[in-house]
Amino acid sequence: MSRPGPEVLRAFAVDGEPLGRLTGGRGLTWRAGDVVLRPHDGAAETDWRSGVLATLGHTSGFRTPRPVATRAGGWRADGWEAWEWLPGAADETRVEDVVRTGAAFHRAVAHLERPAFLDAADDAWSRADRIAWGEAPLPRDPTLERLGAAFRAVSSPSQLVHGDLLGNVLFAAGRTPAVIDWAPYWRPAGLGAAIAAVDAVCWHGVPLDRLDALGDGAAEWSQLLVRALTFRIATLHLLGAWDAGTADRHRPVVDALV
Image 1 (cartoon, rainbow, N blue to C red):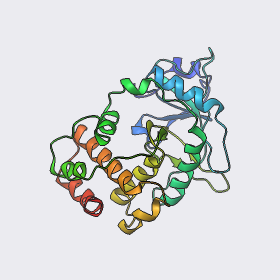
Image 2 (cartoon, helix red, strand yellow):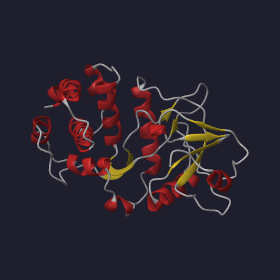
Image 3 (cartoon, one colour):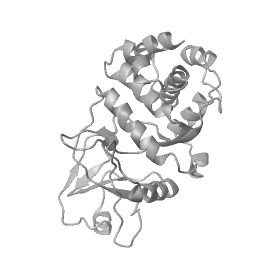
């Protein structure tokens, strides 16, 4: 499923538009006019997310693309989903702005109940999330063992959060930042900011000494950073991408946290 076929374009009423591949999205995201098409994440998750974001109220702090329905009124066609195209670009160095936008988004979805499909999720990211919260055993690795030894109980309540904010907030001049590609998890709201913070330091050159300030006084921030870093490293393990180079890249943050 490398690109949407003619039947998919007809289903979403974009069959007369030129089709172009977008950067990001693992190379599987396409634009046809004002519509973005991407392989969906399964019927239950796709229909739930589309239903939520179709009506979610936007604020001065964030907006989201709206899902595009098929001609038949559903949210999926032959393995694909479609979304409103919004102008803008990610900027991983603007981590403070990403965290601020994520906080506005999390306030807007705080009332939602936990969706049942989270229980059945079995991809590497979902498994790593359970590892980071002590719901599955840690892979055997010295770095993860150090982080696991630093686990402490977290009392902040869980809610729906976006688990991959840093590259999924779009900025455009004169427009409210847009949150895209919602990866839902049921964890304390500050976890989204913590994941963005460790990603920014480990991968995008943000100085280590900014980690504390990025929490902006969030409850249990240091422990959320430990869980966020465990999540990212466990994911790399499960994807077979953890090696000496990635260990070196993450070591300064691990040292700072434990």
